[in-house]
Length: 308
Image 1 (cartoon, rainbow, N blue to C red):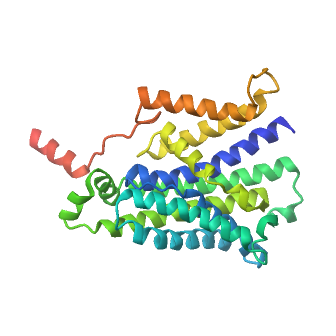
Image 2: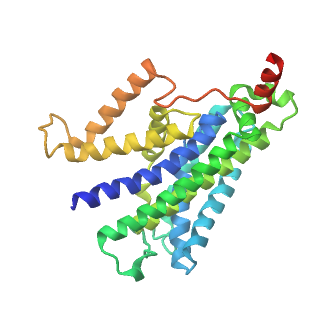
Image 3: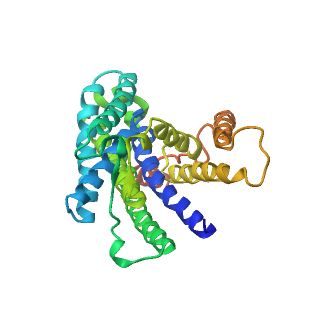
């Protein structure tokens, strides 16, 4: 493979997983919701995009549909589970991920079943070379990443974001202050699921083929590793974590060409992730990019006027 294409291809996957890490960061990092079925909404987005494109919907409407369907499913899954203890949410989301995968695996007529489904590229009429096709997808993915990052930054740095942090720290106290905690949690789950669905649509668009075994629970745990390493409660940390994990994953694949390894090269990444997680938890539990203390403008004004 052309080395430049290999690098650009890796950067496309980094962008896709940045969106997944941002969505999990909103749920867990800011609100304290343990979503262990992130791959389910990623998969729903990919399949909805593939089906919508095959039915002739325009590209942008297909992406909107990905986010919309994933968001609705996020609400349906979270609404009953959020009324119980947090561990029930984790169990529910894990089970939901496997249920969705089995449904798509069994569905032959629309989703292709175990054989998967092919997706025409939106750039097919441009007759682009392989390198330029990857560049076009790269620009598309990072345009979406930038838009989502800005929206989430504005959201989490607003009064709404302060409520989410308060829920993460003590949801009972927030409830006593008159906030509908369940309402906020369901909203966050819907937004996070929408972003995950969007990333799934871009994933399907880039690969142009999807099948159920591409969406195993391992994908969810990779996203959790990104958040642990990069730092939760911080959108920049989610981006850094996605970049680091994809770098290690890709690097381990080509390591065997330069170094004689005593173990299978594919397993090297898991060893490295384990070592990194242990080191991060021991020496930097907040992650590589720590969450900054929240500063409210009205508090700063009060302190300023009080000292003057």
